[in-house]
Length: 308
Image (tube, rainbow, N blue to C red):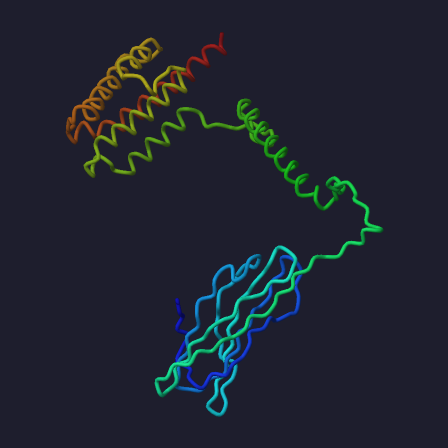
């Protein structure tokens, strides 16, 4: 027989019967099977395992738990509880339980506890008036304003975002701000001269950053050439860009200086060439002269056109 040690509790065991917390239950309800004991301190008791199911048609929902309810005059009131249920109506005779009591003297007594009867009932049906009805369909309640409001707000927000994006793209293509005002851009020569002055103040080549220095200067001039002469200049080899630039109305000496500067820049950027201090010092002045010369040439051409 399997036995469960429940604690050092002790005392003379008295014959008793187990009981239920209620007389009857409905199908599927739960009920407590109560196992009461009264023992003395200093002794032990053992209780045989409760089978699941304890009776045909009865199921154990929660196994045996032991609580000490009170302690007075050396006596302990012990209560074991098992939670049961049944899913079929009828009377069920729960089995007797056997507890083994070990006295302080070492003597073992056997306690036989009778099991109660569990009554399981169903909900009574008045067959005289009971009418079987069809299953009703799902009830559909009308939408309320409170339910629709969040979705309406989300739809309006999405529509506003789409409108703002479309308007922004359209006005950008027209070179205007979101509010329709024309975007005023600085002339190409102003942008280039401002960038060259910034590079000069960074003192890049003086701090052993020749590659960055030549890259920023040539990128500035490439952007100026692209804006000033409408030449594709940013992602092309220097030779191709200079070949297109040579076709423009540019002073020959000025073109030679720019061509030389781009050649030195290519050596520094791609061949790890180290330019001399004299060459580095001439880069910014040469770039500035190129921008100023081409800009003044443009002004002269515009003035001649007006005179004609």
